[in-house]
Length: 426
Image (cartoon, rainbow, N blue to C red; front, side, top):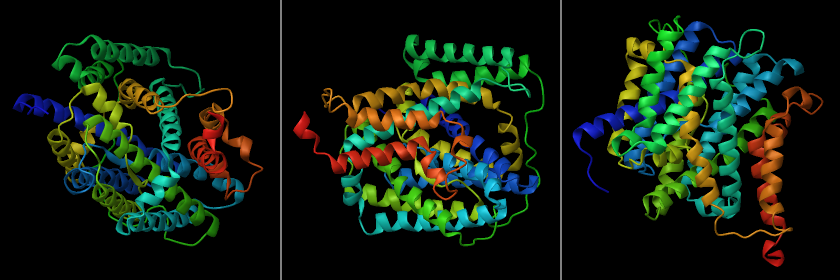
């Protein structure tokens, strides 16, 4: 890997910074809204998210798995928590009761993740999360993220219809970034994401003037903003199960990084990665944050930029942590329009679909073995597109699991791999 010039390192660091920011900022905002947090608590969770995410990236990059992989709020956990919040009122549970139970469950899930790393349980997990299960995970993760970013870039009016002007702007930005990525030569193509973020931000503010900032000048520190830890057995069990399933993020991310960088990931890297993820998940439970995991979707970003050096990643992690410490900086970058971030990430994550396709290149499928991949993926996608209200008659404690397409797809894939000897039908 050739050494980057100073100018390229600066630009790559800026591009990484915007990538981390766009993937992070919407999560604490949406969770704070779901739990109806006060403005003080919302500001605290946003700044805590910035600081811990930046530090987590640095620690993972230096002493964890040692790859340039965003360590951020898990998409699997994010969807699960939002689903629980949507269902809480229907079973007479207050947000404080739900939040307190989730905080306890997430903390225990973090401890389970630490134990996985400390006692080297990774080989056992790898037997469960086989290559075919990981392929299922990659396809479903790609589809879930693309759906999120597609909906996020198409702005809706209060009545629920499309805001045509903003939506057309987002589509234009997608086309611009795609053209730069495909046609751009050398450094221009490598920095398509950065160019899209900056150009999109400038033109959005010019074309659609308004106040997009979050006032982050006041800051009142408190632990467990969702609610004090309390035991609701069903919620805690669901959280612990989600914590185990979240291990698929780490295994898939490190395996994909191994292929991308052309190196073999050592057992020690897996162990350290799990341990660090568990530590930051426990910290996240205390600060009202969605649990952490290495972002498999980072592979799509790296394939788009073609810059695999770790130095810009470490620098951007430090800069991002500063956003949580320096209020004016956090306030300024919070003016980045969410639609712009979603449009650019939509293009960045198209590459992840290629990663998913490459993961099944060694397999051949016939009329029987196609069930091995088609059944979990298509059921997962179907569940992703079902309204949450469809599941109202199902027990509140298993509803988040049944209604989560990503989790159910992975579970079905695991069962198929364990119960059927597919080599007999090949």
